[in-house]
Length: 588
Image 1 (cartoon, rainbow, N blue to C red):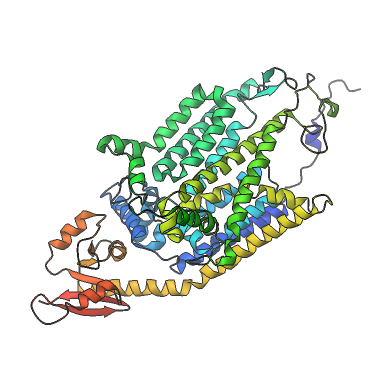
Image 2: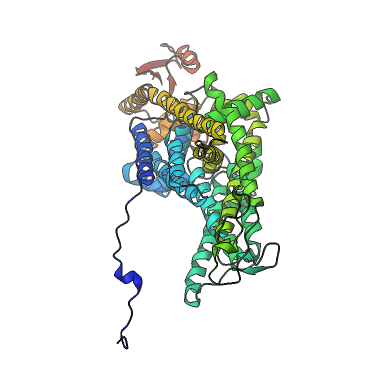
C-alpha cells in the first residue's frame, strides 16, 4: 500500500560531499598570493622608487584627510582624477603621510585585478588551467609593471581592475537571460528565451538593473580618472549595444545612464563650474610641442612598447633578446581576433520544439565549425558573447597601442612613457587564447608543430618575465638606500628648524609630503629661476620667508650653481650636508 505515503525528493536521500578546491584553482591562489606578497615586500623596502608626482597625489590625500581640500584633478592640471587620493585618505588620516599609506590601496587594487582576471578568464570560456596561466603571467613583476601597479601617481593602478570589472559586467549582461532572443530554427524566426518563474522575476530584474548601473558607474569613474581607458569602454559598450539594444531602450538604459553620470560627476561638475574641457587638456599635454619622427614613434610604440608594458624588459631598458615579444604580441593580437571572429560567425543551433530535446536534434561537426551535438542554444549564445567580449578587449588594446605609437611620447621618452600601455594587461585572457588552444592540442599529429610552438612561446613568456622580475628585485637595495638618504634629509631639516625651501621639481613636493607640510617648497630650475609649482600657495609662503633655504642633491647642476654662492659676504650661503643632499642656508 502506497496510499498516503509521500515520496521524498531524490536529492534528499543522497548525501552531499563537501566540494574540494581543484588543483588549478589552489595553484592560482598560491601564485596570486605570491604575486601580492612580492609586491608587499617591495613596498616595505621602499620600492619602486617614489617621486614628486606621487607625492602630489599624497598631498591631495593629506588635504582630503584634513578636510582642507577635495580636489577633482591632479594638482596643477585639469585632467587625471584623484581617485587614488580619496582611497588613501583614510590611511593617511590614521597613520600620517607616508609612501606606504599611499600604496596600500594600490596593492589592494592589484589583488582585485588578479581575482577579476581569474574570473574573467573563466567567464570567457577558459578552463581553470588557462586561468592559472593568466594569473601566473600577471603575477610577474618587472620594473615597469610594478611601477604602473603600485606608484600612486595618478591614472594607472586603478585602470586595470576597473576595466576587468567592466568586461565581466559586459559578459554577465550579455549572457543568455532576460532580453535574449534565440532562433527557433536555423535561418528562421526568433523567439524570446524562456521566461523565469514569476516569483523570481522581481529579484532577478533588480539584480540585472544593478548590473547596468554598475557598468555605467565604473565607466564614469574610468573616464574621470584617465581617458586612456576610453577605447576599452567604447569597445565593450559596443558589445552591449549589439547584444542588448532592445533592453537598453528601457529601464536598463536609464540605469546605465544614471550610473555613468554618477561616476563622472566630479568631472562633469568641475567642467560646468570652471568651463574646462578635460579632453582638450589631455591633448594639450600630449607632447605636440616637441615632435618626434615617425621612425622614432613606431620604434618606441611597436618595438619597445609591448615588451615594456607587459613586463619583459630589464629596469630602464630593453635588451635586444627581450624584444622578441614585440612581433609576437602583434601576431597574437591578430590571431586572437581571427579566432574570436570565427566563433562569432559560427551558426547558432536551432531551438527544438520539444521541451526535452534529444541529442539528435542538433547537427554535429567534428571540425567544430558547426554546433556540436547536444549544444544548448543558450550555451552557444554565451560562447558568442565570450567571443564578442574577447574581440572587444583586443580592439581596445589595439586602439591604445595605435594611439600610443602615433604620439610624440613614444618617440621622445619610450621607456618612461610605456606606462601609457599599462592597460594592455587587461586583454591578457583574450590575447593568450590562441596559444592556449594550440598548446592543448600539442599531442595531436596534425597540429603537433603548432602546439609545440605555442608551448615554446608560453614558456618564453614566463621565462622572460621571470628574468625581468629578477632584474627589478636587483634594484631594490639601491632604491632603499636612496629612501634612507631622503629620510636623513627630512630629519636634518627638522633639526635645523627649516620650514621653507627652494628646490627642483623632483624634490619639492616629495619633501613637502614627507614632512606633512611642515616644510613647504617652491620649485626652481637649474638656473635658480621659478619653476612649475603644482600648488602655488607654497611659493607664496616661501617668498614671504627671508630665511628660506635651498635644497639640492649632491653633484646636481642645481647644487653646482648654488655652490657658487657659498661664502661669507652679504647674500652668501652656508652649506650643510646630509647623506647625499646639500642644504644651503642664508647667512644671517
